[in-house]
Image 1 (cartoon, rainbow, N blue to C red):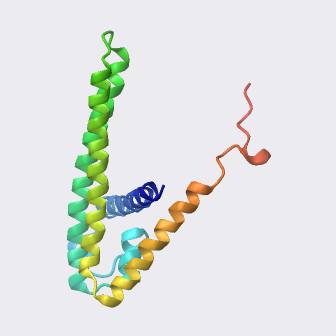
Image 2: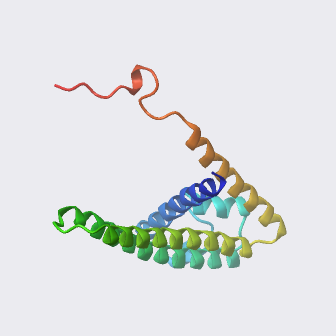
Length: 170
């Protein structure tokens, strides 16, 4: 259970960081603006603001984030291709359990690679920090882990009152 919780927290953080990357990538900010304090909202900006990165740390942080973003896109694309291959097996008349096992094992390896990349991304952010920032970063990560744990404990949709009913069928 604790192993899964850590993976869920890392996954949630990864999704948030990727969202920030997309915002920055599609937002069209220029190089000089990106070296100064970040504009807008998002997890990367939150981290930069909370840790009070100086310009040198900011430059290194953005470089780390760019590299991480490219790796995550590559891994995500590979997972998508493997899942496409898996679900294309639905239409295969000579379905083999070994093929299904092989593809799902490859997907599992890619998910593992993604989680390891996320872990080392956090380690590289921590390495940018001085001691006081490391303590703040540790608190940010722990808070994110606890929030992910709370989401797992929520009742599923549809288990509550009338607000959770499906729409009527006509």
